[in-house]
Length: 419
Image (cartoon, rainbow, N blue to C red; front, side, top):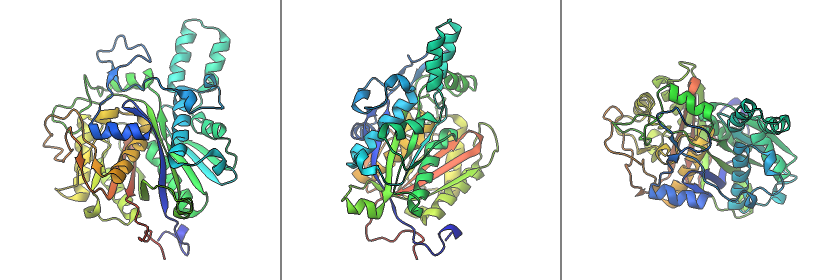
């Protein structure tokens, strides 16, 4: 037991609500159906000018009724990513059957992970400046641009006052970082609830960066496939409501999963390439923190970008920890694209849905598994399964690794580390 919790009972942390915005579905119910069916959301990118790029496909969120989810904040005051984070937060509350009034007066945490912040707004600001647009529009756009607004806007929209609010900037692992922060805060009793996850909007800067690195796929993202040729950038948001077991039982909440623990490390090995031993260490940190043995894990939701280096490195790290016969290792980026800061949050929701509804989502677009990866990626078709424990991986540029462990909630079980 860590010194922070010595002599204290760790509160069990339950995931009781989820909000999902993605290219394959809006809302957790539609997201679940899309995952089970192996739906892909790939289309031509229209949010920014893709002329001059050889490839221009990605995962763009279609239009949906934002007024259904954003009531108080004028939409022109919110950037695209903030709209996603606010809407997904309200979705999570509605899914949990919790009202804003239920949260007021209770201590809370709002943490939203992101890679680009409001990069889409900055794209527009640059374009408008180059075209000589009016200064008033530049100023309005600039006010929407700070990344801190992704989390602050949630608190403002929901009129939450007794909350700690922050945006997590750890790139593509940021969603899991936010989940870990929420887990710690609820488990320790520092807060009564946490609204945590990740959000990002498509932006030209990130697309161009991945393109220049040679990491953008020509057609589809194919994690662990022998013919994979890269990722497809995407956008969206995944926000979950975490609360203590006592809180959830008191209101007879439905429970998707229990958060058992997580692991973080940062090796700074390379700006863009993951390091096998460091990833393996992070997997072990998460399993140890959750008090879970590798043989007890039923599903690994991989970072699975579909790039040649990432998939092999991640698969080798998994085999370091799990041996030559790991559990199914899926890559949902094949369906939703790489949604940057939202990626691991949406993957966590997918893991929770797998536990609750008894299925393993497929890795879409699959043809032939790369023998260097050597994993069962559940190609193309979901399978029914009794999923009890899920490991959710996130590997970010700069060596930022974050792994979260989710489990089916067993009311009679004791939390790891309880006295």
